[in-house]
Structure formats: C-alpha cells, structure tokens
Image 1 (cartoon, rainbow, N blue to C red):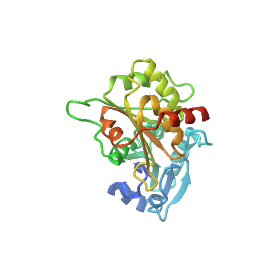
Image 2: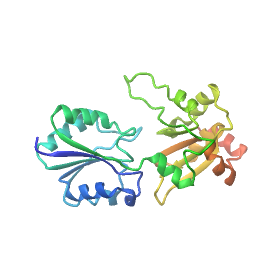
Image 3: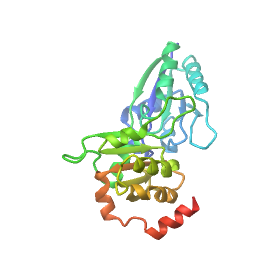
Length: 255
C-alpha cells in the first residue's frame, strides 16, 4: 500500500470549526469518503478529490460498514491521500475503530485528525460549561443506540453515575430515555437541554426537565440532536420558560 488514509473529524457542522490540519489535508486529498452530516463548504475544500458519500443516518438507508472498510483499503492502493471525513470527532460514536482495524490489518498507513464533537459544540451554543467546580466533576458521553449483535448497552448506569451527561443520537428514543432514567432514580426535575444543529445558523435549543424530554424531542426537526442532562443546564432552564403542561400533553398525544 502506497497511500495514507486520514480519519478526519469534520466538527459539528460549521465549516469554520474545522481544524487547520484537517483543512490542509482536504485541500491535498485525492479521494474523500464523507458522512451525510458534513457541510458542503467543508467538502468543497477537497476541490480536486474524488468524493464518495458513505453516510449513515438513523432510519435511513445507510452504507454497510464492511463495504466502507473495503473501499478505504482499495482507495489506499490507488491514491496517495485518502480522507475518511466524519461528522464531529471520528473517535466518538463514529465506528472509527472498525475502520482503523481494517486499515491496519491491510497494512495501510493511517492518521487520525480529531474534530470538535457535538457535546462541546452544544454546550458552547447555550453558554454553559459541562464541568463546574463544586457541581459537576464527572461527564459522560453516551448513546442508547446499539447495533444488532452488540453486547448489552447499559447507558443509563453511566448517566446515573455522572454529574453531567450528553446523550448522542437520543432524540428518537426520548420517551424511553426519560422513562428509564426516572425509573432508576434520576429526578424527573433534572434540567435538560436539547440542542439541534449545534454551530449552524439553523440551530435550535429547547430547555426543560427530564420528565418533559419526550415533548421537547417532538418539537425538534430532523437535524442532528444532542441532549444535555444535569444541573449545569439549570441556568438555561431558568432563563427560558419550559414547555407548558398543556403543550406537553398535546405533544405526547401526537406521539
């Protein structure tokens, strides 16, 4: 193998949050395999590269991971610079390890270029710190989703043990998330913030409580969403009126 594969984090969406290293590699790339959430202006940096869409979105037709792995290995045999461009940071819920393992097994040289993950972008969007002296010393990044055949995913245990939690890919499971956590002892009044399209002009932020999370999720669109749980979100909750009781009841009836 003569080529090198770069696993690059494209960040949460805004093109100007891309790292300088990532931008430089994209400009020199021969081939770019990109996720569905990568911004068109970010992809445009790879002006002379062949561009291959291999995105995955929940509930939509997706490219099989084994096929992506093979395409990356094959591309490294034909090109000098191959980029695997992932939304957010490639090492957080991006199935990067499967691609890393496949490339190493095939003897392909690789480099990982980190990116801004959705958790920090969402926190920045609403002006709160995920950690806070005397209040939040533990932060958990979790997802309730698991692929078929994976071992049990006790994501709730991590949330219960942490002061602050960020739930990735959880909007569609908001009802079960709320029910599970409350059932296992998390106060229903725990502040939550739901952030959609963090860092982009079409961003949307909704504040409420854990009990109100299902109703908040129903108000979100089809953009990528992260949910922040914990006392660090209380300041946002205090600044914004939560969803009214009547609105909650109406939204839940629609579900």
